[in-house]
Length: 412
Image (tube, rainbow, N blue to C red; front, side):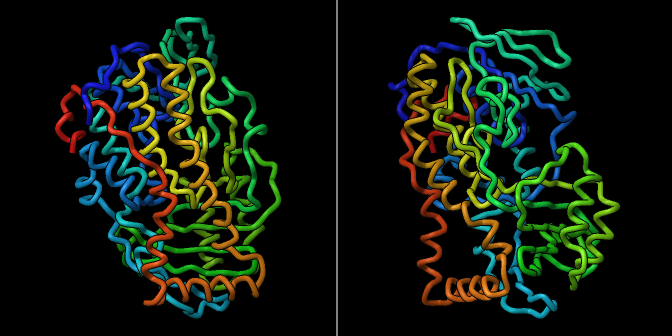
């Protein structure tokens, strides 16, 4: 990294909304550069568990190595094995190799969040159990009101609070202007490991519906159930999990294999995730002293390598800020540097729902033929290149070296 690129720090106080992945990744870099960073998170503590996320390609690896967490991610990886595809009767069709779904390395989102929090907790102020209620921007700062805390002023505000970003709503307007529904929904919850799986998964398909039962962590008692189903845009309360359970029960009623048992487990779960497969599309990722990062600005629910995208874009945003100092120039550089990259990752996610849950029996068979072809010895190398093409479609700049405790790792 080039120390000569550094400009005198401006906009020294930064508020980041969101303590999952994108927010702490940015907090890491900014704190190393000498910024005073506060992260506010609506949840009362770090969110544990969640889906497994993967990294693939040189761009992901380079940033994670510069952060000094590449080896730790490998130490906590899932070591996920193959994933078996089943037909409507539960008969095995084929098994996909680990790299097909798990990339170069895979880790639970909650474990990655813990790693980032551990690296930043001593240099970054974390405020859990609170959220932003208003943003009042002046020429020199942003007055931020909170649900629980007293109002405070910051030089910059970053929305890293996910697909349904509160910061985006306050600064840019209602999400209905920017969210594109892609015709599918996804759900996930934990359940007993009835099938005795060991770091493997089984995928069941019926037209327009898919369900997987997986075991990622080797715990013989625990499994994860994922559901993907085709649907027009639904009207439901995102906070009402009982309503969401009813939707899933109706959509999967009458199916075979493990579906009835999964629906019974659904009734008892307290960790249901349910959302549309959707994307955020904005003309700009910043407005005044507010900027969006990760899913809040260019997210895709699944298939768009959102975690790797957020990690790389956090590196770019911090680097542009320390290079330029002035937020207007820095935000312009950030947008120019990542827009093509973010759009490319979103493009790869456009067909995720239809590929996981094809709408007809004919399309299921066609999808399976595609899987067989991609997993063949002849095509495996080509497929490997295709899976990292979007993840690598960015030229990483050589930003200034941090002055903080991780300067050695960042220069790697």
